[in-house]
Image 1 (cartoon, one colour):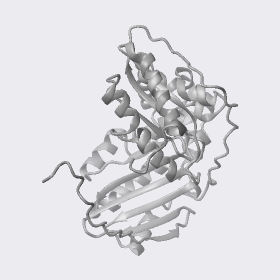
Image 2 (cartoon, rainbow, N blue to C red):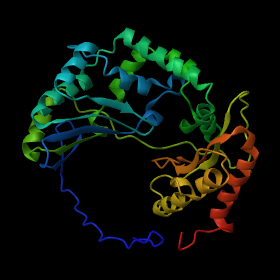
Image 3 (tube, rainbow, N blue to C red):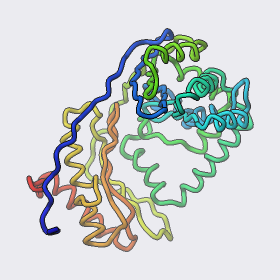
Image 4 (cartoon, rainbow, N blue to C red):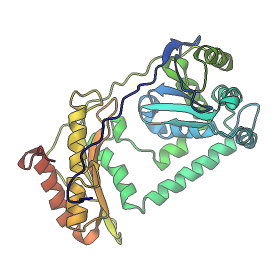
Length: 355
């Protein structure tokens, strides 16, 4: 075997796109089923369009993730311990999350345990109890995490970078703070749950060992108490701050063993016609271990254990960010190399056909 020669590519695999059926549930939620019978497993998810950026009050940043976490803390018929035990007996778990532009609740189960697990999800979705003691416990955990983040350069950069990029008037530039967490009440959590988890912004998806007709009847029955309501999310964002010349913003962290770089700009939404071209470009710039940034700053110069770049594509102008953790004594030299690579791929050293 001659390792000096690149092996010829194998035969391209055949693309087999699974079939699916699409309809609407009685409560207005979209419904998609894709049958897959090779294993006795079912994956179920309710995906919600829109997230914290569309629904949170800036003075209550963090209420979305708190609400999602508290839905596992008990319902009106089961406390948190009973809920956890029931799911363990079924060999499953139900995950709830609300992110910046979307949220979900879902699980994976065996085919035989699907109806029972679905009933528990319906209970969590429609009858969460939101116990006050759980709110205080989760709030305390988050406050400790915020305090710990102040000692980590990478965490500091993750909080400072979006604020500089977008400004504090833009949802993308706002952070969860000690003040916003302490301001959240149980009534805020209840109000968020009622306003957010609505069928008219939901997509119900079932994939696995099911019959598309009978499973719809099962889901209609389980979610019968989830009334029609809500409206589709709107992704209207404030105007971005005016662009300014390249500027260095320095956060001094005395005694830090390494510095963290966050270099970037507001980027395009996922709907940009340049999406695939940008993905290819970024793969070569900083999207892989062998990319230009890492090959230069880690492999050649030894300034870092790893640097990268990425686009946060979404409905809004998600950030382009390049950076990573750098040996403190080489911060100035690393910045020179970052800027060289960013300028290079933009013109002075364009991508080659071989690359």
